Length: 252
Image 1 (cartoon, rainbow, N blue to C red):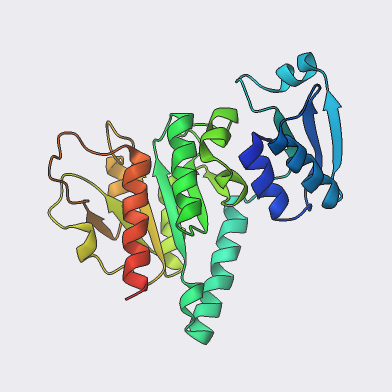
Image 2 (image 1 turned 60 degrees about the vertical axis):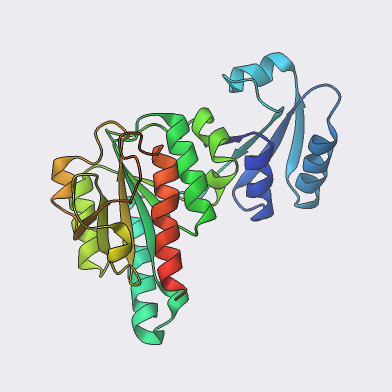
């Protein structure tokens, strides 16, 4: 059972409901007003609250946290569950032509810093992403640092680890998902790509970008326009811009 750490993450998870939440752990001692509110929320949701010693709490964490951790089953999804979800959504969209059924996925290729992963999760949660896909061997773990940086986003967006990213992209394309890779070394601008259908945005690491074999799998390659491309963006900022472009197009 994985844990969520920090007031924001725990609060966001409890607001989704108590399903999958085993208990809330609070460090022993005087509670801050925010922790008192969190304790009351957990009790209202019928979730067991435990007070544990600082020593016990420190064994659960390796960062100086706000004093709260939740032992929970966050939104869990493997590759097959992801594909089944996409099948249902595509079927619904084909039947009803419902704009709300259009998929938005974020693929992170080679993001190895947990804080960058967490920041991308936060951006994805803010922009309504349905799932984040990462390669099993080339990605930062969804650990405590990532969870804290995500500021509650890790409880809202499932992160799916896949063994073979290229194969997974192929499965997405078979299910009517257009895959848009972001690159600096291309002429097409991101806003020139029609992203009103089912879309997966691919982001690479800040240093190397998306891998060549991943780029070859994409339906489109595009870049985010910048005044000074030598400086570039943090990957989470770039992801936020790309996801905003999708949502902007869908609203017009």
